[in-house]
Image (cartoon, one colour):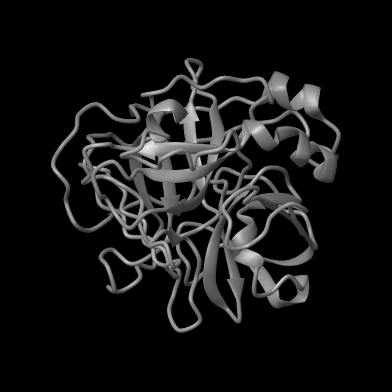
Length: 312
């Protein structure tokens, strides 16, 4: 079984950089092309308490996951067009779909029983919470759970079409009940350092090929974290990667994110099998090109901002 991502993004910018944003006449496209071997496992981040904010210490103490017989990635393979579906509800229990007019627009990540984190650019056309709903579960149709949105907070310094500060938090109108199939991810501390060249998993819904049909089932893929010095080389992104950004993918190309599900999670487990949110799908230069890995919002850089607005 392989798992390599090709995430497609909607509207290309004038500089040929494609932002991961839904366009008005199609779904957000997330093509997942797979090139890394893996085995089935379930992922959970179990907290001591769920209902109240301001539980940072309890979250750190109790945030744990339970992994059944699967490594994130054990071998690289050539690029394969098409996606690998998730194995069922509960595989990635923090994954959510942000929907407007009952259409999937962006991905989001559940970080508590009332809050999610996503990309700021997902809301550039509509910031009114009443226009949005959030669904949970592996399948878009029918969803496992639906929630209305109470609040959308976009980073105050985000300015489209720039890519900096591409982060937003979303508050649900009604909390979710945690279970084996819906659960929050662990949030890292602001000072936490994730080693480069480790494997991380990105998930989302979208077309399994450019301009292809959108799968109803959640897709998953594995990429490598790339250090910013490498990503800022002239032949890569030529200094465009700021401290709030994180590159992930492969410099040789062939395995990448491209046209797709903005706002979705990039996660990785630590040695204790605790799954942490490392990045948020943000932008990239076309798809799977050599020296053009995907670029994500770096969660640790915005950890204090998340706490300021959510209490988490």
